[in-house]
Image (tube, rainbow, N blue to C red; front, side, top):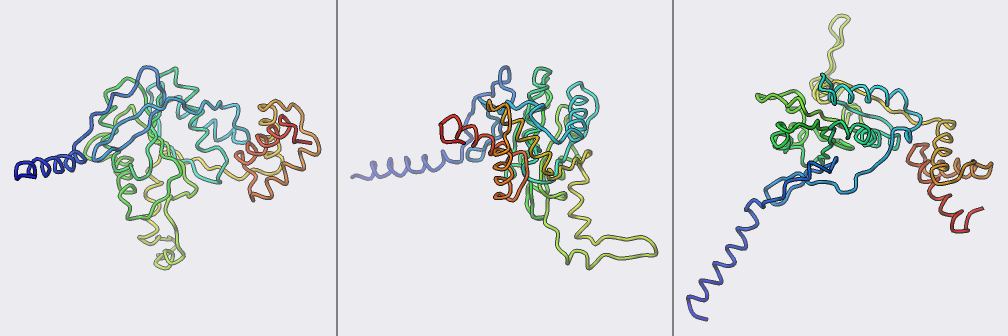
Length: 290
């Protein structure tokens, strides 16, 4: 191999290496037909990707959370109609319908121009870039952040605080943030954080560590809490999903099996109820059920 061939080979390797850092042109998302999107990153560039088959759950399918549905539905309706609305934090027990409620509201109001963009926790640093892409569009956008939990020094934690509170740039009025978390304050809380709490007269002054940890959740205008279901609520949800799968009546045996199913999983939640109904329906239709 002569010197010129070696030079060509080195140049090809260099170009291959540089291509990894060049922005990749992504197609414009399908704004006309898609209702749900996802923020993606490739290399150093981010883009909005259409979701071809979004979850089509209906509000009526969510049982046992009527108060929560009413509050978030009202806020979402205000937002879709162009009136003032709050960013929303949904917290509480796992499997109680927090994420499903947001998806159901998207399906309810998609015909009125509501759209949803899912943003994963490690992409929250891109929130300003996402808003820049959509602030001039006519649709109304929910930026959906699911199952959030942070350490206080994570970059996504600080980015979300800035967007919620507003920086030097005003947040677009066609965007709200809906987030779910199993923790009310989205960051771990430790007993040692209470040691620096001060009592001055009749006033309690929390430590700076506690103040910092509650500062993120306080930036959400609407807090909605979800609680574990009791036995009757759990069985009501089981009945709903059994009917969905074509089983119109819950027998005494099915009731016992449903309770045992929840006991084995340590949770009476909507997710557990759906999983049991799916299992029972599959067993019956395959001939393996009782």
